[in-house]
Amino acid sequence: MAKVKKQFFCNNCGASSPKWVGKCPSCNEWNTYVEEVLVKGDKKDERRTWREENQRKAVPILIQDVKAGNTQRVVTADEELNRVLGGGIVNGSLVLIGGQPGIGKSTLMLQIALQLPFKVLYVSGEESEEQIKMRTERIGLANAECYVMTETNTQNIFKHFKNLQPKVMVVDSIQTLSSPHLDSTPGSVSQIRECAGELQRLAKETNTPVFIIGHITKDGSIAGPKLLEHIVDTVLQFEGDHHHTYRILRTIKNRFGSTSEMGIYEMRGTGLQQISNPSELLLSQKEEELSGSAVAATIEGLRPMLIETQALVSTAVYGTPQRSATGFDLRRLSMLLAVLEKRCGFKFGMTDVFLNIAGGIKVDDPAIDLAIVSALISSLQDIAIPSDVCLAGEVGLSGEIRAVNRIDQRIREADRLGFKHIFISKYNIKGLDLDTFSIKIHAIGKVEELYEQLFS
Ligand code: TYD
Ligand code: MG
Image (cartoon, rainbow, N blue to C red; front, side, top):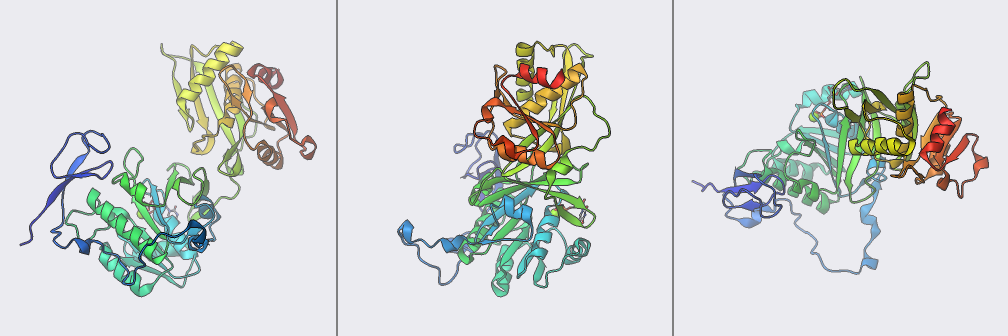
């Protein structure tokens, strides 16, 4: 009988130890070690399970002599996916897609598999072929060369991969895979680490892009060791609100492009629809002008986007005033409130403040500050901001309006969407050719000036 070997693994960084330890010596996290059953690993070499027979031996070469052709990209029909991947799928890359259950990860990957014009292998450990077929019919796309397979054993997957030679492989999900070389259960730290490593070698050695779907834990990080995110080339997060139909695909890590990109989809009855014009979706349709709402001209990644911010300021019912922000950093909100209180004399000390960014989107762009400040003043004073006004500027600690990047793109987008006035920092005006825009540009230097020009 084979000897069962046990080992302890750190849930956080994937480090191993022959006995349990309270504090991981490698990442210093407490209480992260779990026990797992390991291999009867007598033959070490067998664990290198994906190996081409005629594997190229690595030798040092001059960087000038390296051919750039190896990282050619496959440009897909899905513009949003191309964008988050930095311009298309890079050959030989390993891409991890994480997201809440039911958000649409499997739908997205199946849809992409069906859109690609060549041989694709879709491996599912979660659904049967019939279920995938049902979904395919729902999506209504057809790729004559899309193969599906329900399999969880990595060795079998590799065998079929070799026979089929697909151009792209999708694995749903890494937590269901198991390598026969380990005895631990699927989804355990050692299995995830081993399977991800095997897939990585497969992707690199055959120069085939591999997509893997990963589950996420309650606090939003990808389940399994943090190591998984280090192994893969790109980490994408698929997020959204179950009450809203739109979904955001965000780049968390990308070895081949920028990490500030995002793609927007809408979940319809017939699959995910790309949203190429997000501003129209994020500006709420309302009949009359209401106080407490202001439109920000933001940039996410390379794309300008107009987003509505909403504030509600009301008298605090309880002793301690409440502060609540959705889609915006709460500490930044406190800072903006303090600036308004100190520099302009607005009293927020005894009021509850609620802030909301439309569409459940999370915005990091500092240019949204000016719209938030305006929404706060508008709600406090109960004066509506005209609906043809938008704003872009960062607010500093002394109430100064600071310049933001790529202001011309923001102005052009606001212009295109029919806004008549835009408020920007006076430090942004330099170098702008004002005659090319039909929108009226208001340059301001301080929060006080904003109040004078917008509310009186
Ligand atoms: P799914 O891709 O199974 O999510 P995940 O793999 O992330 O767990 O998505 C399932 C949800 O998407 C389900 O609640 C139904 C919905 N959906 C649609 O609204 N329209 C569609 O065309 C499809 C295929 C799914
Ligand atoms: Mg799924």
